[in-house]
Length: 135
Image 1: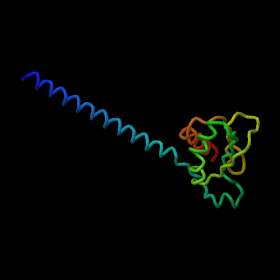
Image 2 (image 1 turned 135 degrees about the horizontal axis):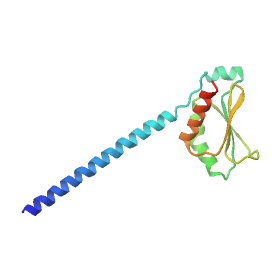
Image 3 (image 1 turned 90 degrees about the vertical axis):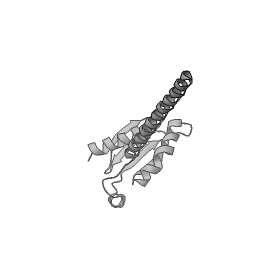
Image 4 (image 1 turned 120 degrees about the horizontal axis):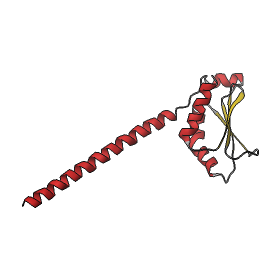
């Protein structure tokens, strides 16, 4: 009888521990998603219409090859988000650099260049740093 009670108590404690672990994992995932959403917030410092009137476009120029997996990942992950934030995104054929290669144009001049794509969050962090540096 005592062994059955201890066995039952052991299972209850194990279930409680499992539920706590799952709850903790869910909180960590939610925090990560919130952090990702804040990373995805790319904004221009001037309205896009005003920039276009001055022909001082905020633009991402990237070189791409059709068989380049990082190029495809960049297009899938970033292009729509950048355009929604007011950035012009221009795709060019390879120019001798490794692909994907990126040039960041602000106020009519290229201010940063980068080769390679490691994911949306690091790419947006690169843009944010470049914009803050060149304000």
